[in-house]
Image 1 (tube, one colour):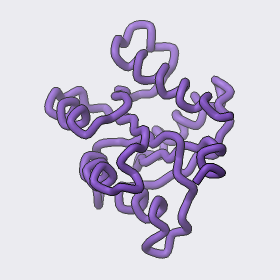
Image 2 (spheres, one colour):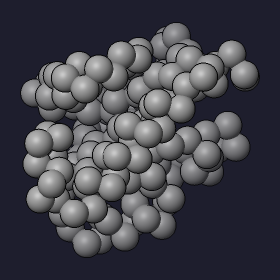
Image 3 (spheres, helix red, strand yellow):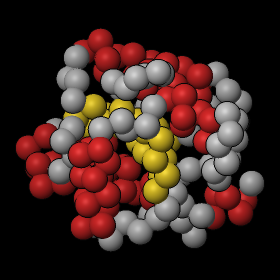
Length: 147
């Protein structure tokens, strides 16, 4: 388990190709050079984390960036499963979503998310954004915790 913790990585759970490219571009722009695993929905992410459904198991990621609105299994459904699984209960999960609905925020807070980032993900807009500044700053700090 320690060797996995020494290797920072991100699991991006996102079904929109433009959003995936945006995250990749922003990480590059800020010299965040860690492995980025991409799952297109919650079911695929769960399979990657557990090594099920024909997916190769990935090392436990430092951070999960989780979209809320996806097919097959949405972000909140995946988050509920992760929070009830002893292997993944403590994962650092950041919600990335276009939804600014209070119900989504409250549900995410109940499930102990590390941050809530409203898309599109752009670091330039963080000066105006309030809570997303804090969420993304924490996200970057977590990635820099590597030894």
